[in-house]
Length: 402
Image: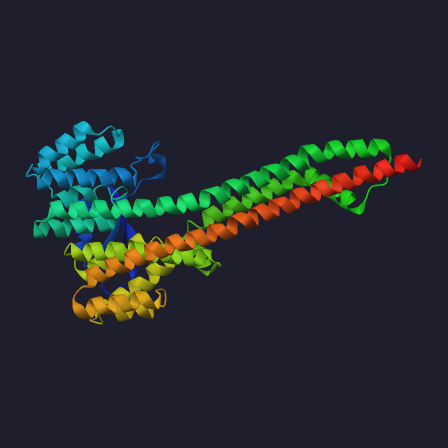
């Protein structure tokens, strides 16, 4: 029987994980629900000998288009099986085509649409599946699919903005590393041979530069092992639970970068929570999905505790404010929404506000980061140029005197 690994929250709000046997992911999820667990994630547990050589690569943009097109079909009154068959015939992505075929077969076998989608938890996130479950109960699947598409579109836009903001500084940093490497490994040794052939007395800056180049050229294998070993060790450590917590804490505590991470997490949390509440998902269930979607262990641990207080009847605004991870403006918006019964609308307002602020913080970050890299690169190249020019000038003077 297949085995499935799971992540869930028990009745007291404590996060649990483990492995269980079930006939399918849906059966595993139902068993956990029977244990009164709030399920965060369920996926097939494979032995290391059963790894997949290739993994399905379905981008969020494809999920967005699928949601929007399926919603349009349903709004037009087309049965869902016919709509899925049409989408499967039109799609050019082979991985998405396989997913659509599997969902179609599950529906024909009597499964609900949400349960069929839940079989692909690595493609469709928990909040997506949770919203679908609620939509099927209320009969507004077409409208909810359109809302999901709109959310994913915004999320893709935010991610694209972040990638665009950091791509140029990374390119400049890469160029700086390549320039320094070429200078140290190729240019400076040529000049050293030239200077040694003249038996000239070199300035202090030139001797310092050549000694540094000689040292790095001799010990570069050690430096390479240390650098790649540190990177590899860090990647392995950051895959552990403790490492993820430390990584997220470091990001949040970093100057300027911490603000970008915080606003990105808050925007995503408010957007998903508001979308799920608008779709009719109960607040405790919506909190679970929105918390998992933050992808930040610091926020996840704090929000799981906040959810436990919500279950005790404390409301949502005060427990979230007590985490001290949300700015005062976000807490006030939640409080107003809770008191006036417009929580979903206030969450949307908060998400839009922090999306705009995130754009401003990204611009400020790049406006500081780019000149800093250019200055560092200029200092290094300038030092090399000054050292070489001063050496050439000194040799010229010595030859003239003689």
